[in-house]
Image: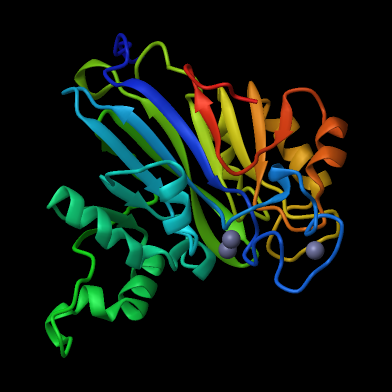
Length: 294
Ligand SMILES: [Zn+2]
Ligand SMILES: [Zn+2]
Ligand SMILES: [Zn+2]
C-alpha cells in the first residue's frame, strides 16, 4: 500500500488538444469532399499533438508539449504560448516531429535550453533529421537553431516533471512500437496526489493500432482517455471508428476523446452517434477545471 500524496502540488492544469488531424491534416490538399469544404471549425484538423499548461509547485507557469507537429507554429500562436518547458515524444513519424525547428523561438523568449524526452528509436530519428540542432558545431554558419537537452526515455519508468508524473504506455502502431503517456498530478513526497485535478488521470494514446497486454493495467481508473481514431475503413497502423470505440468501452474512462482523424470523419455526423462519455476531439479543445470541456 502506498501512502496517498495528499493534494496536488500543481494548480490550474489544462490539457490542450493542439491538433486532432491525421498526417495529411484536414482539409487535405486538393480535396473538395464534404469535410474538406466544411465550414464547421471542428472539421479543420491540424496535425496531431497536445500540450499541458499549468502552475508548478513553486508557482511558475509551465507548458509541456507532447510531440511537435508540422503545425506547431500555428498551434502556438493560437494558444498564445510564450514558453515551453519540455517536449515528450510518442514516436518518430514526421507528422509528430517536423515542428521541432519552431521550438527555437521559445529558447529565445525564455533564454534557456528545453528538455526533450524520447525513446531510443525516436531519439535516433531526431538526431538524424535534425543534425543542424544536435551537431551544431558542424553547421557552416552558426545560425539560430533550437537549444535542446535530449534525455533518453525508458519506456518502463515513469518520469516526474514539474509536479506531474508521466508513465509511458507501450502501444503498437502497425509494427512500430510507440509510446502513449498516463499523466497524473503528484502530491507530497513524489507520490501520486490523492485527488487529481480535472481531467487527470489522463492517458494520451495516439497512433495506436493495438494495445499490448501489459498496457491495459496502466489504463485503469482514468478520468480521461485520448485515443487514436483514424477513419471507418480498416488501416494497418491506426484504429478504425469501431475499434477505437471498442477499446474505449474496455478502458471505461470517465470521458474519452478521439483524435488523429482523416477527412472521412465529419464531426457533426459522427459525434452524436458515439456512445455516452465518448466524443470527437477538435483543434483547440481545452480540458480542465476552468475549461468548458465540450
Ligand atoms: Zn500520426
Ligand atoms: Zn477531403
Ligand atoms: Zn504515426
